[in-house]
Image (cartoon, rainbow, N blue to C red):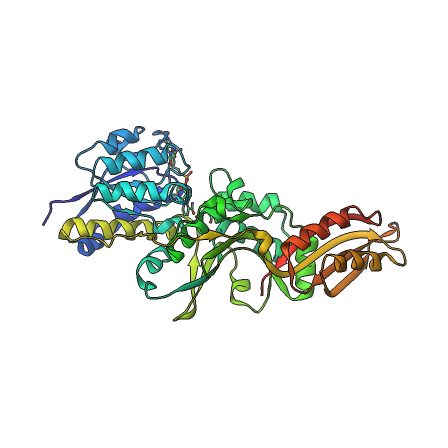
Length: 430
Ligand code: NAP
Ligand code: HSE
């Protein structure tokens, strides 16, 4: 038996503190899972004087990640600092030094996964990243291993805890967007720059990782159409409820023959669907395959302890192979070439909310614009905007239409003098 397996931790914030706590407080159980003790050798942070959720001995705390990467007694480097740089360079340097790596960094894996994995192969080390998608939900490992017999057709997911928390609170309590965003930050769900969460960028990184694994072909973050939640207002939640829908930030990748359409955007989903009931910081990933039909992975998608669960599992899996001298499966082998389809090819139903003059003939003119673009109306709601206003609010639900015709219709409606403003256009996912 090895005397111990050395772990070096870069970052001891929300996730890193949970990981340090788990390695320290669960050491006996982890020892028995691995067959050798796990030892936290060094921890690198930015500010060594900061008070933290979990404190480690000052002897192992420093502010230079390079030291940790060059330390011979560190076998596994755990990168939990986040961001693209210098996290990428540190991961690459660790791999070149023959260290295994565990990371929760979706940005780095999404943008640089292929470079990292091929370097890891050359250096005969493993880079695991279960926590990068879905927090504590096991989804990376099932896609790489348990679903390998399946041909995956689509992924439909809620994979950003911060936005799901915000949308749930806005829908149920008419909560103020800025205030709930701040709460999500205080609860440790948000990225250090929450723009990444609310603009859908974090979900796009995650969807690119899931799509690459599911379709065994490189799908980059820039291949994903991305729209965030910042245009949603109280009115949208109230109309969605009236119409029997929930609003969620969905991440969807659909494979058709040899092409994939990946998209992240707010969507109206019928309230009886399972994904509509995934609330707060919970995440869910629905995978549709040839053999299984649909399988749903559901659970805590962000936060310190759920994410630590996935990070520590990766550490244990690598440590077991070090302790037992066995090899882990080579996780990421991409074979297929895949064409990326534009969002313009999407065909779905749409919700339009707009304000227009409350005059005879106005609705007919709006319907004519939609009709000219090949868009057929399935239902509409009209509400006055109070005695002082000469305008009315219209909510139009359409039958299936193509995204390109909706783009044309929006542009024509903007040019119609009776239309005061287009409040929102939201895709419907059934
Ligand atoms: P965080 O709370 O901001 O913690 C980041 C840590 O990295 C801090 O301890 C910080 O040090 C340290 N750090 C930053 N730059 C550094 C540098 N140049 N040198 C040394 N240390 C540095 O972030 P987090 O929420 O734990 O997230 C970490 C990673 O996990 C990110 O990739 C994130 O996307 C991912 N993730 C997070 C969650 C979640 O729920 N939070 C879930 C899944 C995945 P100081 O403390 O001294 O500032
Ligand atoms: N900021 C991310 C989220 C953390 O809210 O989902 C988990 O990856």
